[in-house]
Structures are given as structure tokens and as C-alpha cells.
Image (cartoon, rainbow, N blue to C red; front, side, top):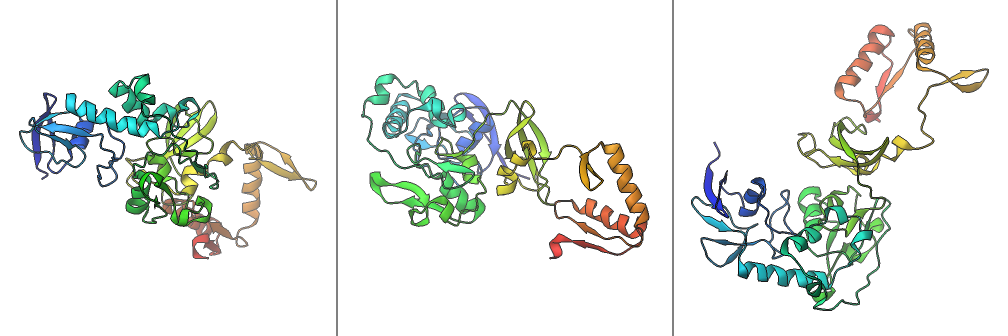
Length: 345
């Protein structure tokens, strides 16, 4: 049985599992502590220096790296912590792309959220002066682009590729104020070992890594990816009758929110104008649009005449249960053992 700790955050009683960070415990209790570099899927680093809290009235400590303890009293903000956070934000904003209305992450940007939380004023946004940095945008990947001018060097993308994907396709390049994120050798993403899974894009807290065709869905529908038999859980973002996004279902045990490049970005075929939405039946050598009743009757008749002279190729897109039914149909109904599966090839 997991041991728990009871303590207070801003006077509110909180209970969390022993070993949980103060930041994660606060988030689970609906208490906001500003942060940019922390993500529940990754090991904490404390690199953004925004999640400082005071424990039992002591000096500021990083909430992402401070484990909870029985009886402690956590203050998420005071005059010292506020001043420290504002100074960090001024440094970040002074070197950051500011056209937020044209940014793909404007609706869900952690930098904007923190700026609003801290009450940043116009003079604070320009006090340190705007830099002349204008780094080229890497749009080589067919599914997403990387804009280093929006990057805050939080390292989430680097750690995601290392800790979750295990590929290490992304890393820090150069040093000092010239430090940027990029693929090994500072090559374009399309020329690197990046597999385009989009896990880094999914976790980027700003708009540095973003889909090439971003769209905010009106609603999301829970579903299952059809690209293979694993059965990854997905949330399909829909706007009107058009699919505009796909994200992983973190509650599905098969994938715990992770997706491959097909599952995350391969949804454009759904609304493609060339996609067949009605069956075609060949008449006099030409394919003519028909209805499902006519098409299914024709298929049934062809199957009936083909007993014993029939073969089927199953698909890895199907589940194990569906593939079992296919082979059962071939052997029992069609009276043949002529069945194969593409995964064997």
C-alpha cells in the first residue's frame, strides 16, 4: 500500500503519495504553481526557475524537485518569490517572439498563462529591450515546424525524445546566449533521425514546436487508432464534420497517450476529396456508384460461387479478434485454408 503525506499548500489541506513533488501534488489538487520545464511524464530538472515555493517559511525552493513531507506548510507565493519569477519572465520575454495572435500555441501557451498570473505590465515586457535575434524556422518536417525564436529552452522536447521515445534526435546546440534546440549536427529535422512521432510537439509549452496546419477543434471524440492492431487510444478533434487533430489518450493502457507518426498526423485521408464514401460496382466494364445493399448482395453472391476457390489476406490494422474471425470465415464458410497475413511477409 502506498504511503501518503498530509500537509498544507496556502493553508489548504492536501494529501499526496510519499515521494510526489510539491508541484505535482499542487497540480493534482487544483493549485497553480507557475512552471515551464516540468511535465508529469518526465523527470524534473528545475531549469526554468519559475516554480519556486517557500516551505515552512524558509528560503525559496523549486517545487518540481521538492518531495512532499508530512506536516509541511507550503506557500506558493510571497514578495521574494514574486520578484524572482518576474525577473525570470523578463529575461524570457526579452528574447521571445511576441506576435502571439499569429502563434499556433496562443490558445494554450504556458508563457502567456504565467505572464497573466504574474500580472506582467507593458513596461516589464520591454524593459530589457527587444533583441535582434531572427533565427530561421525549420519547416523541413512534413508534419510540424520548429521556430527557435519562440523557444524558451525549457528542454521538454530534448527530455521527451530521450526519456520517452529513446531516440535522442534533439539536443542543445552551441552555448551561452547562442544556445538553441535542434537536431544532431544542427541539421534540419527532415535530415535527422527524427521519426516524426510528434511527442515533442505534443509537450512543447509554447509555440516553438507546432503542427504545420494547427487547428483548434470544437469538440473531441474518444476513439481507437486504426493504423495497426495495437489499439492505441486517441482523442479525435473535430470541427464541424472535419477531423482537424488527433491526440493520444493518456488513460488507455495500450499507449498511455503516446502515438506514432501515423496515429498522430495520418488523419488527412478522412476528409480527403478523393476518398470513396460510396461503393462502386462494375457494369459493362466501368465502375458505377451504387448503394451498400446492391454492393453487399453482389459480394455475397461472388463469395457463394467461390467456395473452395477462395483466398483471403488479413491485415495488421485489424485486432487479433477480427483476424481470428477472418480466418474462421475462410476455413468454415469458404471451405479453404487459403489465408495469409501481411505481418508474415
